[in-house]
Image 1 (cartoon, one colour):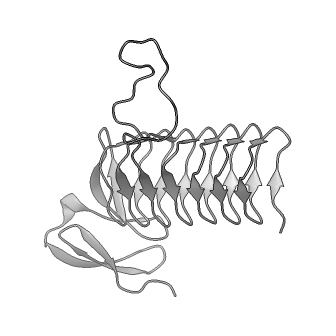
Image 2 (spheres, one colour):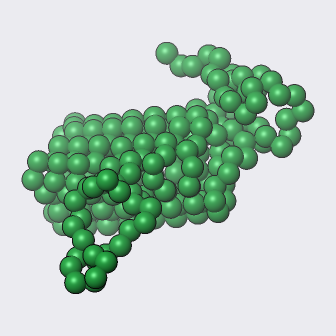
Length: 207
Protein backbone atom coordinates (compact mmCIF):
# COMPACT_ATOMS: atom_id res chain seq x y z
CA UNK A 1 0.00 0.00 0.00
CA UNK A 2 1.43 3.38 -0.98
CA UNK A 3 1.66 6.37 1.33
CA UNK A 4 -0.75 9.33 1.08
CA UNK A 5 0.21 12.98 1.60
CA UNK A 6 -2.54 15.62 1.48
CA UNK A 7 -1.68 18.48 -0.91
CA UNK A 8 -1.85 21.06 1.91
CA UNK A 9 0.70 19.22 4.07
CA UNK A 10 4.21 20.70 4.35
CA UNK A 11 6.89 18.01 4.21
CA UNK A 12 10.43 19.36 4.49
CA UNK A 13 13.61 17.80 3.06
CA UNK A 14 15.02 14.52 4.35
CA UNK A 15 11.74 13.32 5.85
CA UNK A 16 11.12 9.57 5.65
CA UNK A 17 7.49 8.38 5.44
CA UNK A 18 6.74 4.65 5.46
CA UNK A 19 4.44 2.67 3.22
CA UNK A 20 0.72 2.83 4.02
CA UNK A 21 1.08 6.02 6.07
CA UNK A 22 -1.44 8.86 5.60
CA UNK A 23 -0.50 12.51 6.21
CA UNK A 24 -3.62 14.69 6.35
CA UNK A 25 -4.35 18.37 5.71
CA UNK A 26 -2.21 21.19 7.08
CA UNK A 27 0.29 18.83 8.74
CA UNK A 28 3.85 20.20 9.00
CA UNK A 29 6.74 17.72 9.27
CA UNK A 30 10.20 19.23 9.75
CA UNK A 31 13.43 18.04 8.18
CA UNK A 32 15.09 14.83 9.30
CA UNK A 33 12.03 13.24 10.87
CA UNK A 34 11.11 9.59 10.31
CA UNK A 35 7.62 8.09 10.32
CA UNK A 36 7.13 4.35 9.98
CA UNK A 37 4.63 2.23 8.06
CA UNK A 38 0.82 2.29 8.33
CA UNK A 39 0.60 5.46 10.45
CA UNK A 40 -2.06 8.17 10.46
CA UNK A 41 -1.05 11.80 11.07
CA UNK A 42 -4.14 13.93 11.66
CA UNK A 43 -4.82 17.44 10.43
CA UNK A 44 -2.89 20.45 11.72
CA UNK A 45 -0.35 18.28 13.56
CA UNK A 46 3.22 19.59 13.87
CA UNK A 47 6.21 17.23 13.99
CA UNK A 48 9.55 18.92 14.70
CA UNK A 49 12.86 18.06 13.08
CA UNK A 50 14.65 14.76 13.78
CA UNK A 51 11.64 13.21 15.53
CA UNK A 52 11.40 9.41 15.24
CA UNK A 53 7.95 7.78 15.01
CA UNK A 54 7.46 4.04 14.68
CA UNK A 55 4.93 2.04 12.67
CA UNK A 56 1.16 1.69 13.16
CA UNK A 57 1.01 4.94 15.16
CA UNK A 58 -2.19 6.99 15.27
CA UNK A 59 -1.72 10.72 15.69
CA UNK A 60 -4.98 12.67 15.91
CA UNK A 61 -5.57 16.31 14.97
CA UNK A 62 -3.56 19.23 16.37
CA UNK A 63 -0.83 17.24 18.09
CA UNK A 64 2.48 19.04 18.79
CA UNK A 65 5.57 16.81 18.81
CA UNK A 66 8.78 18.70 19.54
CA UNK A 67 12.41 17.81 18.95
CA UNK A 68 13.90 15.02 21.13
CA UNK A 69 10.64 13.02 21.24
CA UNK A 70 10.66 9.35 20.19
CA UNK A 71 7.41 7.46 19.57
CA UNK A 72 7.62 3.67 19.31
CA UNK A 73 5.29 1.29 17.42
CA UNK A 74 1.55 1.10 18.04
CA UNK A 75 1.21 4.34 20.03
CA UNK A 76 -2.00 6.40 20.13
CA UNK A 77 -1.64 10.20 20.46
CA UNK A 78 -5.09 11.72 20.87
CA UNK A 79 -6.20 15.17 19.71
CA UNK A 80 -4.49 18.19 21.22
CA UNK A 81 -1.57 16.35 22.84
CA UNK A 82 1.41 18.65 23.47
CA UNK A 83 4.99 17.52 24.10
CA UNK A 84 7.70 19.69 25.66
CA UNK A 85 11.50 19.46 25.76
CA UNK A 86 12.74 22.36 27.92
CA UNK A 87 11.88 22.81 31.59
CA UNK A 88 13.01 26.43 31.88
CA UNK A 89 12.57 27.99 28.42
CA UNK A 90 13.32 31.61 27.58
CA UNK A 91 12.70 33.42 24.29
CA UNK A 92 15.66 35.79 24.50
CA UNK A 93 19.09 36.26 26.02
CA UNK A 94 19.34 37.69 29.53
CA UNK A 95 19.70 41.25 28.20
CA UNK A 96 16.63 40.70 25.93
CA UNK A 97 18.59 41.95 22.92
CA UNK A 98 18.78 38.68 20.98
CA UNK A 99 16.50 35.73 20.37
CA UNK A 100 17.87 32.47 21.71
CA UNK A 101 18.53 29.85 19.00
CA UNK A 102 16.01 27.06 18.48
CA UNK A 103 18.57 24.30 17.94
CA UNK A 104 18.86 21.59 20.63
CA UNK A 105 21.31 22.34 23.44
CA UNK A 106 22.12 21.13 26.95
CA UNK A 107 18.62 22.17 28.07
CA UNK A 108 16.84 20.01 25.46
CA UNK A 109 15.53 16.95 27.27
CA UNK A 110 14.15 13.77 25.66
CA UNK A 111 10.81 12.01 25.96
CA UNK A 112 10.20 8.37 25.00
CA UNK A 113 6.74 6.88 24.44
CA UNK A 114 7.04 3.10 24.36
CA UNK A 115 5.19 0.46 22.34
CA UNK A 116 1.41 0.41 22.54
CA UNK A 117 0.92 3.37 24.89
CA UNK A 118 -2.08 5.70 24.65
CA UNK A 119 -2.08 9.41 25.47
CA UNK A 120 -5.55 10.89 25.89
CA UNK A 121 -6.91 14.08 24.36
CA UNK A 122 -5.58 17.39 25.61
CA UNK A 123 -2.62 16.02 27.57
CA UNK A 124 0.60 17.92 28.23
CA UNK A 125 3.69 15.71 28.38
CA UNK A 126 6.78 16.86 30.25
CA UNK A 127 10.33 15.91 29.37
CA UNK A 128 13.22 13.79 30.59
CA UNK A 129 10.74 10.97 31.11
CA UNK A 130 9.40 7.73 29.64
CA UNK A 131 5.82 6.59 29.13
CA UNK A 132 5.88 2.82 29.46
CA UNK A 133 4.63 -0.01 27.26
CA UNK A 134 0.84 -0.11 26.91
CA UNK A 135 0.45 2.61 29.54
CA UNK A 136 -2.61 4.84 29.32
CA UNK A 137 -2.60 8.56 30.11
CA UNK A 138 -6.12 9.86 30.82
CA UNK A 139 -7.46 12.83 28.90
CA UNK A 140 -6.30 16.25 30.05
CA UNK A 141 -3.49 14.89 32.22
CA UNK A 142 -0.25 16.73 32.96
CA UNK A 143 2.60 14.20 32.91
CA UNK A 144 5.64 15.33 34.92
CA UNK A 145 7.16 11.93 35.80
CA UNK A 146 7.77 8.66 34.00
CA UNK A 147 4.83 6.27 33.69
CA UNK A 148 5.36 2.55 34.23
CA UNK A 149 4.30 -0.20 31.81
CA UNK A 150 0.55 -0.89 31.77
CA UNK A 151 -0.20 1.90 34.28
CA UNK A 152 -3.25 4.14 34.04
CA UNK A 153 -2.43 7.70 35.14
CA UNK A 154 -4.82 10.59 35.68
CA UNK A 155 -4.78 14.17 36.88
CA UNK A 156 -2.69 17.32 37.40
CA UNK A 157 0.01 16.18 37.90
CA UNK A 158 -0.71 12.70 36.59
CA UNK A 159 -0.60 9.91 39.17
CA UNK A 160 -1.01 6.14 38.80
CA UNK A 161 -4.50 4.98 39.77
CA UNK A 162 -4.57 1.48 38.28
CA UNK A 163 -3.46 -0.69 35.39
CA UNK A 164 -4.77 -1.59 31.96
CA UNK A 165 -4.54 -4.53 29.56
CA UNK A 166 -2.82 -4.57 26.18
CA UNK A 167 -6.30 -4.25 24.67
CA UNK A 168 -6.93 -1.03 26.63
CA UNK A 169 -9.47 -2.31 29.13
CA UNK A 170 -8.95 -1.49 32.83
CA UNK A 171 -7.67 -4.40 34.91
CA UNK A 172 -7.91 -3.02 38.44
CA UNK A 173 -7.63 0.08 40.62
CA UNK A 174 -4.64 0.12 42.94
CA UNK A 175 -6.79 1.38 45.83
CA UNK A 176 -8.83 -1.83 45.63
CA UNK A 177 -5.83 -4.15 46.04
CA UNK A 178 -6.12 -6.14 49.26
CA UNK A 179 -2.86 -8.06 48.73
CA UNK A 180 0.54 -6.73 47.56
CA UNK A 181 0.71 -9.48 44.91
CA UNK A 182 -2.21 -10.64 42.82
CA UNK A 183 -3.05 -12.20 39.45
CA UNK A 184 -5.73 -10.67 37.25
CA UNK A 185 -7.26 -11.71 33.93
CA UNK A 186 -8.68 -9.20 31.46
CA UNK A 187 -12.44 -9.63 31.18
CA UNK A 188 -12.38 -8.36 27.59
CA UNK A 189 -9.60 -10.37 25.90
CA UNK A 190 -8.52 -12.96 28.48
CA UNK A 191 -4.85 -11.98 28.85
CA UNK A 192 -3.41 -12.46 32.34
CA UNK A 193 -1.12 -10.30 34.47
CA UNK A 194 0.72 -10.44 37.76
CA UNK A 195 0.57 -7.23 39.80
CA UNK A 196 3.23 -7.02 42.50
CA UNK A 197 3.46 -3.80 44.53
CA UNK A 198 1.97 -1.96 41.53
CA UNK A 199 4.49 -3.49 39.10
CA UNK A 200 2.65 -5.17 36.21
CA UNK A 201 4.02 -8.29 34.50
CA UNK A 202 2.44 -10.07 31.53
CA UNK A 203 1.90 -13.81 32.09
CA UNK A 204 0.85 -14.79 28.56
CA UNK A 205 1.87 -12.05 26.09
CA UNK A 206 0.80 -12.56 22.48
CA UNK A 207 3.40 -14.14 20.24
